[in-house]
Length: 120
Image 1 (tube, rainbow, N blue to C red):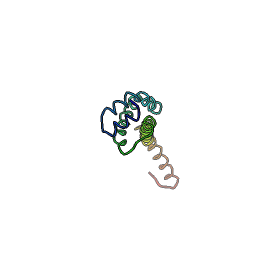
Image 2 (cartoon, helix red, strand yellow; image 1 turned 90 degrees about the vertical axis):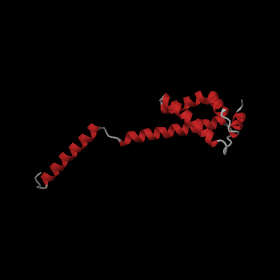
Image 3 (cartoon, helix red, strand yellow; image 1 turned 180 degrees about the horizontal axis):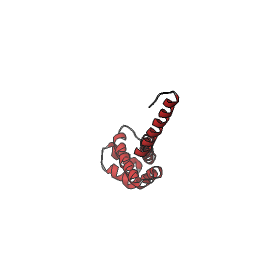
Image 4 (cartoon, helix red, strand yellow; image 1 turned 45 degrees about the horizontal axis):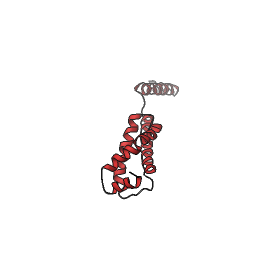
């Protein structure tokens, strides 16, 4: 089945279109996502999410190249997942790091108050 025929299947709302894209481009799409995410489970999930996005977006859209459209969707999903993971890492402090920061801040505050003549 050609890309044009697969797109026609999407327009006809035939579920065989999803199976055809999965068979044709699933492994390559997973490789693209895995190159970005370095996690095969996340890459597989990106491919599944991309198939859902294709199902939801192709009837109003008619992509010229199904492969390019599919890879674009996968890449965007993988990049979004990377951004979320890096944001989660940046926000969190370990229980020990937070304890040490607070301890050091209390010590500096205690010294500053002693310098100004306030007994603590």
